[in-house]
Amino acid sequence: MFLIDTHAHIYLEDFADDLDQVISRAKLAGVDRIYLPNIDEKTLPDLNALVSKHPSLFKPMIGLHPTSVKDNYREVFNELFDGTDLTSYCAIGEIGIDLYWDKTHVREQTEIFERQIEMAKDNHLPVVIHARDSFKEIFEVVDRQNNSELTGIFHCFTGTIDDARHILKYGGFKLGIGGIVTFKNGGLDKILTDIDPENIVLETDAPYLAPTPNRGKRNESAYIRDVAIRVAEIYGKSLEEISAITTENALKIFEG
Image (cartoon, rainbow, N blue to C red; front, side, top):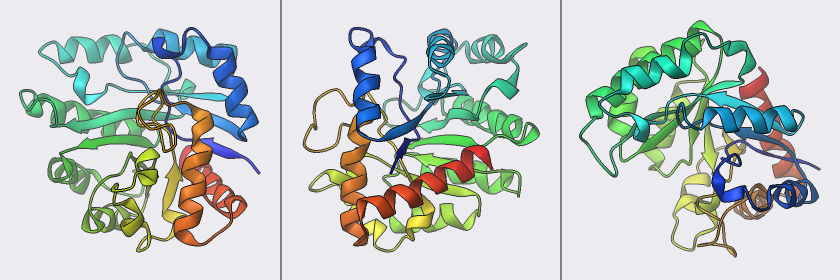
């Protein structure tokens, strides 16, 4: 049995002091692969360095996170992508629209989100979408852009059952399920009972959103096992079955 963490920021400073132990614990927990979403031009060098050191474990994405879209967003975007060999990356992510903290740059976020979707389709890459308080705005873009070339993951899904159905109707997307599924009042258990397990992948979003029993602490990829255990309980399946299903789902997205 092995697990795939489809979304973790292990390259961040949060892991600088015990990175080797974090990797060892992940492997002991059965984690075979960890996909690394990028944030902006400042984080990409550390992300790439981690992948170079552990290429069989870590798989890199490239993208401009919506909360990094500021007044200089075009300059940052060009710095990130100009001259970049996209064949070195497994996905464009994480990208999207975030209206939780600040709505000031919603127009700019939307522009860059759509531009990165087009880039992904042109290069036959999946996208990893960040949607926080923004499903309406996200759906407006994806409704326009959706075709057989567009595939990916709605990372850290916390929407309604109607949001889930809207996403799955696109045909090429999976729902990213993380630590929130273990929270007592997270609500995802009620959503998942109406969603086939073939439509989900597992993630940690480390260092954020650690699952119970480590809620409130730094998250890490080893804790994907706690997510998998809870998902297995919801579906009435064994841990091995859920691991196999979600691993296959992840590989379909990232490797076709």
